[in-house]
Image (cartoon, rainbow, N blue to C red; front, side, top):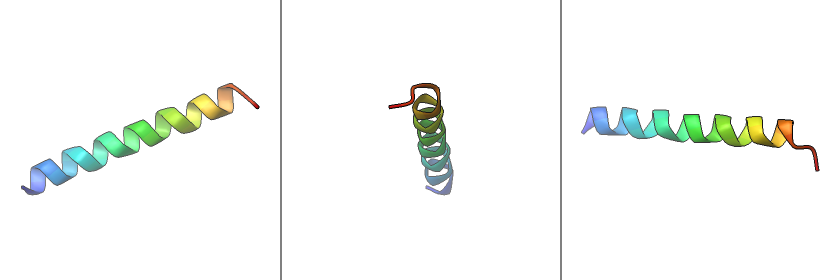
Length: 28
């Protein structure tokens, strides 16, 4: 169960990083 939480947290952080990077690359 703990491993699943860690994997989920890593996935969320990765998605957030991609979203932030995308926003920085494409200014509105």
